Image (cartoon, rainbow, N blue to C red; front, side):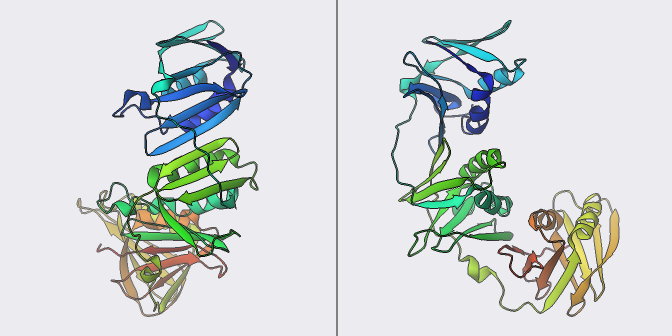
Length: 370
């Protein structure tokens, strides 16, 4: 079967699918994207058996198509083609020929019937604005663990209550929590642990809806799966089993020392310290006094860095060490001009937040020896 379609109609959806269709799969077909015609549309699906993304592209079909092509290669070919015109794809049993202008490419194809996809109807019980959900993910996802033996840390805790949505991510050394006000029929509240890969793919899809911040996202949590829908994109993901740590217990009850500092000044000083910090541990020591923060760092080559910035600090003089990368990542997602660091002593976690009392974001970073 031959299809003729605008190049850009395929590029945008393929960008959001190829992250799932990786080459290194136990089943070769999982490195491909399924192409199937149905009801005046072209269905595209990618899956790794854990996360599945599907979308529909408007296309008036005159025949039946059911084939799977290497997603990354096809995307790279389409991107490389000059102009904005149509592209022709001729699907045969074991190959597909892509033509545009004087360019011609032949890709290996596999039967679509071998692709592990069954269309599934589900009710989407909850809603949130695309802007709010993207904000929650951006403000917390960097704290998720990567291949931790405690598998429940390799994902994001997602909780839906009747008046808000709360997300939490932690790798055991730091914790990020963010919430947004949202009305949903969740009595009692429901929660799950969404895998890192699913969060990454949802984040990529949401980034394409920046021009329509009020666009609604529909989602649901059923048994061991998370379902997500925005416009013509559908994401289905297995959930991580296990009990997520009680994040409320991580926030210290007593934090007598309070540091208020200009966010950009602190970030610039930390970036200067990173030049000479230990490449493996990225440690920086903060020496706190009433009107000044002194930053120091060193590395195994006996090189040292030192800097100072002004601040407002209430509490006893204190020396405490942190991973400076963790500090910078938190600074980058706090919107206010100043940030507040609240501490108990040099051995307990530091609570970082905006100096806006209405902010719903909180961050904990555990100290390290520098």
